[in-house]
Length: 187
Image 1 (cartoon, rainbow, N blue to C red):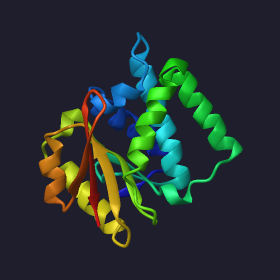
Image 2 (image 1 turned 135 degrees about the vertical axis):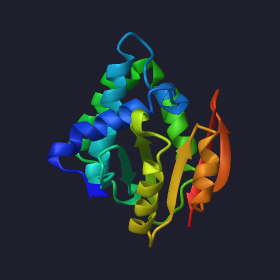
Image 3 (image 1 turned 90 degrees about the vertical axis):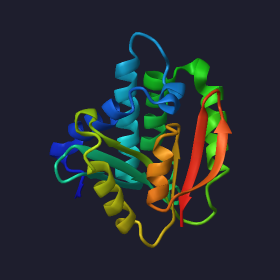
């Protein structure tokens, strides 16, 4: 596993964008119009900023899987984060979707602990390289890295639940947002 470097930034954006293209949770947030694919990339760029600033971004050794980890308890409001939030609204969500996206975020945060933790915001494998164990190796390395803090995540992909449970994650809650969103944790 490698930490994000200047040369790998575009590859991480590419992997996450491709692997989350059909994801119900992501498409719930993104304004659905003719620019949806560009909006998805903009969402991943925003998430990458969050990972770089408030967590870690990792890439598998073969550059075919990536993850973005956030430590929400160290997030601080700044001029830069405000600019990124405005950019998120303008380039990804759209003004009309702000209330439902804020409601979704509030529901998710209600399930997070009061203490420090890692939020596994994204883990994805390039679709051309899925089902080869690359994601499993990366997740094992991530969990080793996060060893001293709990890890929380959300997924809208029901078939991924068994995979996460194999690594010790427990389903805490299922939220109905017009699609099912599963909240998981590993202590």
